[in-house]
Length: 150
Image (cartoon, rainbow, N blue to C red; front, side, top):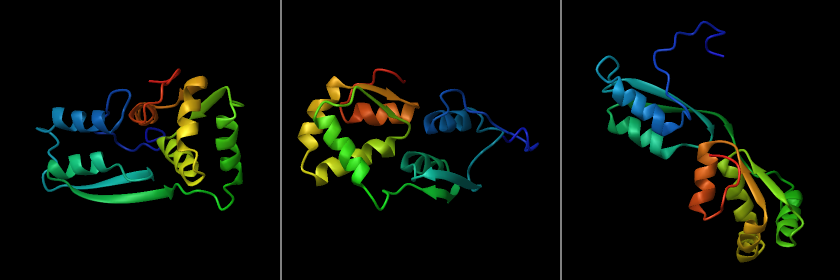
């Protein structure tokens, strides 16, 4: 998109282009692009990435966050409650997660329903697909096996 708008690109982080690769690319190019004292705006995609923000600040950047949208539970959480119940009843064969916040909200609702243990026991019976390395990392941090994804 930036290229289409003729916006100059000074640095490209290698795949999978997570915050880790962004910081590593900045570190590798710190001679020609030092962060010390520079103002850096971070466009947020629903939630703050504390590791990225801390990493930029540790490198001397003055960081401004720019939230462009916010993840929130819908007013009607009935469908999410229904999903928790369906998972626990072994009615779900495949679950696709496109963002780590989806897992956090699913587990939050399961907690509120008093079903955290039941949903955790059901996960190994489900083929779980993950889009993106950060979503896969979140799943792994919760001890949930990812069948598809990195």
